[in-house]
Length: 309
Ligand code: 5GP
Ligand code: MN
Image 1 (cartoon, helix red, strand yellow):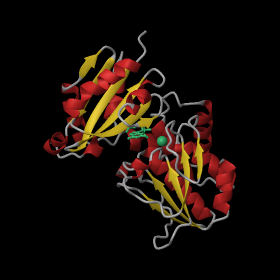
Image 2 (cartoon, protein in one colour; image 1 turned 30 degrees about the vertical axis):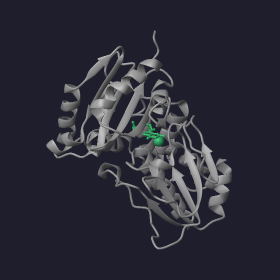
Image 3 (spheres, helix red, strand yellow; image 1 turned 180 degrees about the horizontal axis):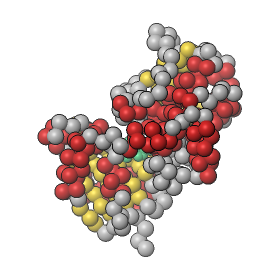
């Protein structure tokens, strides 16, 4: 499928690249790397982010973009559910590149590989298949995506292939120290205020820990729901936690749930019960409701799936 997508790219001229709302390191890294590669091939490209990019992720040269054109091909990166497009409508023939286990049936061509750490790792393979040189900007963006989705080379998707890519990307100009600092050492004080509230509300049931943050809590510390990104990883650092659940209200009647588990598939199975998806050990969902009411239901569902040993 990778070579088929490389052929599609070689045979067309105008592209748009779309990724998911709330773009994370992988969404931004994979999309910007691919845009740079399309630039190198002389193609016209535009990038579409359903919601803004967090500032720390923008540290490489901007890819050249052509705004006023009709794309022939829309490449969707790191998107496993059309709901994650936040209402954006692809304008061209849809090509999907994704590494999630849950994948709705969309896209004229779809390259789905859950063995890959990240969409960025897949884009790295694709760029090599396209025969494009790995510039420092491409290398930095792909490294950022891999670093983000492996949790800084921590999660179970940290494979030998990931380390080989990290080695090659570092040689091609990615700066591991700069990227790690930009991703890990740029927390705001607001983030720690949120963390305080979340820890205050921490509940435990068996080996599941859960907490939440309400919409009005963000106002109290002049934060937004985006400022809570990363909190679930703090909970996942608790010793003895087999699963953690973190709910944040995106607005007064919508909750985003983030679930992490140590045993394979329990996070995904729990998220699916609430209409979501993701990876076996890192999954999420978005639902109508209030976090303080939903938290018990999610933990109860989780208890069905965590390993009993
Ligand atoms: P997070 O907890 O960081 O929001 O998401 C963890 C994983 O679950 C990510 O890989 C993300 O793509 C996936 N995910 C989060 N929310 C949703 C959702 O509403 N639907 C689906 N299908 N996947 C989700
Ligand atoms: Mn990803």
